[in-house]
Amino acid sequence: SKHCKMRNVTVKRYIMKWNGWGYSDSRFLFNKKGQGEFTGKRYRLSGMILPSLKDWFEATFGTSLQHKTPATPTLNVSAVPPPNLVEPFVEELKVAGVAASHDPEGRVFRSHGHCLHEIFALREGRIGRVPDLVVWPNCHNDVVKIVELACKYNVCLMPYGGGTSVSSALECPLEETRSVVSLDTSQMNRILWIDEKNLTVHVEAGIIGQDLERQLNESGYCTGHEPDSMEFSSLGGWVATRASGMKKNIYGNIEDLVVHIKMVTPRGVIEKSCQGPRMSTGPDIHHFIMGSEGTLGVVTEVTMKIRPLPEYQKYGSIVFPNFQQGVSCLREVARQRCAPASIRLMDNEQFQFGHALKPQVSSIFTSFLDGLKKFYITKFKGFEPHHLCVATLLFEGDREKVLQHEKQVYDIAAKFGGLAAGEDNGQRGYMLTFVIAYLRDLGMDYYVIGESFETSVPWDRVLDLCRNVKERIVRECKERGVQFPPFSTCRVTQTYDAGACVYFYFAFNYRGLADPLHVYERVEHEAREEILANGGSLSHHHGVGKLRKEWMREAVSTVGLGMLQSVKEYVDPNNIFGNRNLL
Image 1 (cartoon, rainbow, N blue to C red):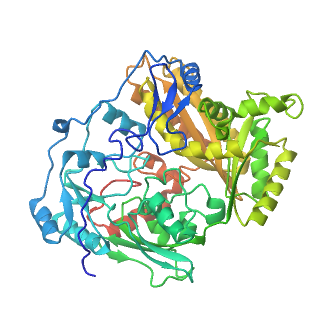
Image 2: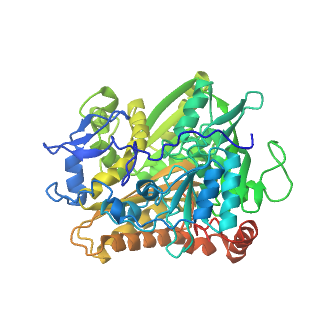
Image 3: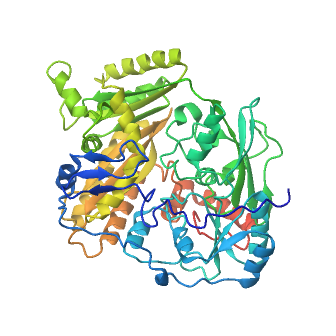
C-alpha cells in the first residue's frame, strides 16, 4: 500500500536505561553485606548472589566500596536544549501521517550510543547536542516520504535502530546548524514473508535481533546471526555496520546472510532487480550499503537466508596450559576448517574474571577452579592457575554430526595440551556474554571506567598483537598518571582461514585523575595505534563511526577513500544524512 497503517508509537523505551546499558531492571550492585548481586529476572544470573565479585573487584582495581560515584538518578529535562524545529517540515509530516515528537527524554535517548564518553556524560547529567525531533516511519513508503521532505526543507536525518553503537556513530555533529531529525526505525519491525522453498525471509529493517530470531524459531527457522548486542540491536544496524555474529562459522557474517536490500537515499531507492543468490554485474552494490553507517540513506527492508532450526546443540570448554597453546589450537581448527558454531578463547585475566562472577548456587555454575582442583594432581600436572586459559565451544546441527565434530575438535585440542573442561563451563561462558556489558555501569559506580574494542588480524600476528596491545595499555596508563594497574585483557572470538578476530577489554580506577575521560581516550587512541602497527584492522564488526574515522585513509588508501567520498556526493549531494560517520 502507498501508506502504512498508523500504529501507536511507544515514544519512550521505558524498559531501557537512559544512562547505562540494557534493561532498567537488570544491573550489578553490591548489597549491604558487600556481596555482588545481579538484579531482575531476565537472565540466568538474575537474582543471584556473587560472593567472589567484591574481592576480585577490589583486588583488580584497587577500589573500595566506600568510594562511590553514583549516577544522576533522573534526567533533568530543563538541561535539554530546546528543539530547533522546521515548522513546515513538521506540518507536512503530520499531513503524511508520520508520527513525530520533540519530547526531551525521547530526544536524549536517541542522542547517543554506548561509548564510554557518551554514557559517562549522561551519568553526570551532562547533555550535549541532541536531535531536535524524533520521527517513526511505519514502513518503507513512510521513509521515502520523510527523506523527500528532508531534502525539500534541508533537514539533517540520522537513522536510529537499536542504539547500541560503540563508535560515536549516533552523536549529533556539534557543527551541524540545521535541524537534526532522528529517524527511529523501531516501528518497522515486521516479518513480511517467509519463503520456505528458497529458505529466505523478507523483513523490515527496524526489527530487533532477539525478536527476529524468536519469531523465526516459531516457524522452525533461524538466521543464526547472534551478535553480543542481539537483545537490542536492529537488522538495519547490522547491515549498516557490517555486523558479525557469534555463530558465523555456520551461518556466516551479515554479508553472507543478506540476499537483497532496499535502501532509501536522497537520490531515490537503491535495490537489485532480483533475489538471485549471486550476480557478476559490476561491483556489488550491497557492499556500498553494508558498512555505510547511515551516511547514504536508510535501509528499510532486507531479504536474508534462513536455516531450519538445528536439532541439537551442545556446549563445551577446553582448558589450555597457556594462551599460546590455545591460539595454536584455534589456528589448527581453522586450518582443518572444522570450527564449531562458535569457538572463543579467553586469556588468563578473563578466566579469573569469569571465576569472580560465579554465583552461590546451582550446578551449572560450579566453579572452574573447584572442578579443576579434583584433577589437579593427575591430569592437570603443570597447569599454572595464573597462566591457564579457557576456550568455550558451541556445536550445533544433527546430533550424529555434532558428536563426531566434537571428537574431532577435542582431539586437535589434545595435541596442544588442551583438556576438556565440561559443558557447564562452556554454557556459563555464553551466558556471561550477555551480562558482561552491564558490568561497566557497576564499575562507574566506584571510579572504574573501561571499554572494549576489537580487530581482525592474520594468524601469524595474533600472539604479538595480543601481547603488545595489552602491554601498551599498561604502559600508557602508567605514563598518564593512573595510580593503579589497569585491567587489560583479550579473547580470540572468531576464526577464519586467514586470521582471527580479537576483542580487548581494558578498565582502570581513575581516582586522583583530574580529567579521567581525557586519559581514557588517549589510552584507547594509543591502543588503536598499536593494533594497526601490529597488522590488525581498524574494526572487525563495530564499524568506524566518528570514533575511528581519522584512520580511514590508512585503512582503505587515499584512492579508496576518494571512491567512498564520490559515492556520498552522488547519492547525497546536500548531506541530508549528515551524521559525519566514516568520512
